[in-house]
Length: 280
Image (cartoon, rainbow, N blue to C red; front, side):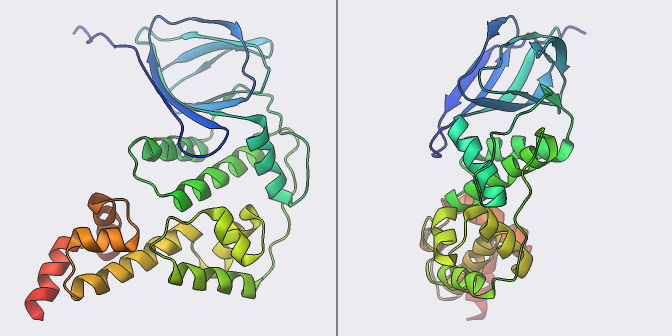
């Protein structure tokens, strides 16, 4: 059976984090000559296979594999499969990766260096692909996107960098977490950032994420989503429409609310509203 020809396509955009650019591309006949980037590049192969020369060796990244390149590291790029390759890429400034490395130990550390150009780490690959797709489809708010992005890079650095920094020990910091929880309860409808929450807690962003998760059992963005869904339930009981409740609670749109509401309650917000209004 003849396979349908694959069309080449490239989509490039900025997700709202300074120093970060995203790309989703499909290439078939494209051949990249030896070149380098002034920033760090990391991505995940979705389909096909990418072949490239990297640090003295010819390597192949197949579906599910992670491909990367250090800043100023010469490499090539070509199809290692007849159908070409499709991948999701993150291009980030050296400063951005350095900031995340520093956050791990709460002090300046050396720039992370990666020996291998192809990594096989299903958990990390899933994080790379999932966040990238959520950004592309606008399914993620600022706090969630920033939290997941930091956690993803921390995972990359700690598992695969040559000399990963040692994380600062996590203490209780009850007061810091309680201040952040109160802030989330009061400002749940706003488009909060991880930097804003960390400042309220008086901690660095990554240390705040770790401390908050240890004490509450949930990352900050998941905790915020839970608050929002609870508030939406109250709004629906009070007679607001689903669209009005979604907007008031800080969800990007009605479909964003529906996805989280169904996941947490087992019922759509529309059906929940009909049930509670019938009982009123």
